[in-house]
Image (cartoon, rainbow, N blue to C red):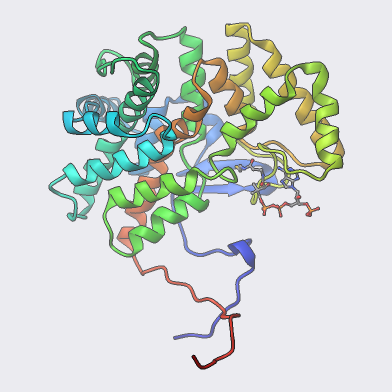
Length: 370
Ligand SMILES: CC(C)(COP(=O)(O)OP(=O)(O)OC[C@H]1O[C@@H](n2cnc3c(N)ncnc32)[C@H](O)[C@@H]1OP(=O)(O)O)[C@@H](O)C(=O)NCCC(=O)NCCS
């Protein structure tokens, strides 16, 4: 073994491997997926095209996209067994726990569980890409005591998710804002959940296990769970005229404010401008402008006082709320998007694998006798 290196706490600033999937450029507050600026992808593409890009490394032709979308539609349904099992989960279960268990269930149903050649793994990705929105919607319908709504192949993946949750599709502008969030949440280099999927893949475990592990890591409030915490925070603030004083109080108490700060970005999260615009569009379309006003005041107060900028979860939380989603569905929605980034990393890790196995420095008891 080569010499040992002591990494800083939290692996901050440590490059652990190479990737061709995405690049965060903190000094410019920019993000690139497979060579394309995310801002440009938001302008010119939809979330299915971006998911295809993530897995294939190139944007699809019309023919390739049509094939990708038709496979996604074909794979949306979930089995009766899975649906029944979702109905047996505790009603109070968090949707991320339901999702994690249901993804493991998809693996148990798949005869190819241990086949990990590229084409089989790609097909497993498509299965999860299509079924995850159905699982989340089924869990939601169960939690409110309503019947499951079967997927509608005449609808896009985003519109179908609204329909499976609420039995109707909102105005195009709302679906568009949701789709923008799916593009922005799709991938973000070696964050905690993505790294988790790579660690699990490095043991040559199966793809469903890697994705279920990613869900577990994403749930934490310091990671994806922040989009839910942001909305609880906005509800606590209550109204725009309380916002400035609320933030000043938190800052005086040196409290951590959800939706602000980032390990990599220090001058602002590249994804925030596009999501902020989408959030304001939703506020305009739904007439719920106070949430947008509260957000703007909190952001200005934090940036002026501490120079700490909001991250993507800050505008995404209120946007999802104004779209009508219950707060505990926000992090599962993140998974509807991030499944493509995770799957691309699983494939990349598998193609050039070495088990990820760091060392630890023992600081426990000296050797002693019983
Ligand atoms: C994202 C996060 C985990 C990054 O953590 P990190 O890289 O370890 O950053 P640090 O905790 O070292 O923060 C550096 C400084 O900024 C402050 N800071 C960072 N995020 C802050 C926040 N959300 N609210 C208040 N202060 C914050 C820290 O207190 C620290 O100040 P200090 O140097 O005076 O101690 C952290 O910013 C955070 O907890 N944010 C809230 C949760 C969140 O929104 N997560 C979603 C991430 S996309």
